[in-house]
Image (tube, rainbow, N blue to C red; front, side, top):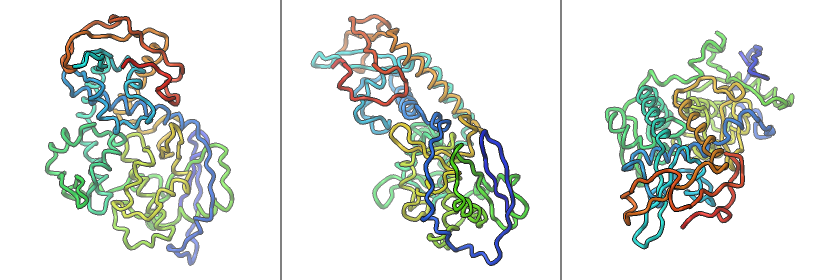
Length: 426
């Protein structure tokens, strides 16, 4: 049985251990009694830093790109507030103003003569968004396969749209995938109403060619004995200085020798109280994270997958119990789970083309935030129409003397304070 660790800067070493005679695959190793400490991983935390802002900004770019003249008043954008994942005490207009390289601000008057902020995409942001659409078109088959495999992980090949929406950023799906993507593949997917009155997405047919997990594909990393006994082992890596205790090491060695159950196979025969079932749960999330383009997602995004994936209660505890496979980052007041094997320090090993687009958006955001904090940007006030949807174009840097407020913090990805300390025009 092969068993290996990723140590230090991606170095690999391994050893073999045979199956213990008389070993009962269904027995438990008192996993709940083994306490594993959480150790901060600065490299993986750096991967997560700024993810919340980047996701919110990219979603706003998608929303504005479908608007007339790529411009909308703030009250229209606020309708999407719940899908952006921003802190509750942060005004949406304050967030948008932080990134003038992405969003350009203008004004109109409403029927009461009050200034109404409007936001449009800058030319640079619009061009990058069009590049993103090209990348999505070029990788459409890959994205569809990811969505198919996600649905194949479920018991009935069905998921509520609400659940898919929570994962669409991580899967690389377009923001409006339901309207722009699903109708094109009507032979694969169908929308229908669930018993609880929600709308669900169903995969119409099973594809055996897709029902192969990433761990099964990595046969080169397994020994012939492993493959014969179906005892596939997960790549393991710990944060430097983790210091795994001998008792935990002994359990982990035995656990790695257990039979591997494909996440696409029926697991109803497994006793949920056993470590074989535990390994199956780890295998499900190992595969799920491989379906995401950056091998990570927020913990809350998978919290409602228990019934669709046929998982036991408190199934997300596997993230704490297997810190060599998953890392839980606590950046930005949330918990993001990262698949350790996918990263060499901060560098993702298998790089999806959409990652490059997102990093370019992040670079634009950092530049805009720095320049704005130095006072290089001014608000543009447009004077004219009562109807906020009828914009009279003005020029940047002009207006009625309303200067852009400068944030007190110099860090693009710092935690937000209450908006009460920031003056915004009414």
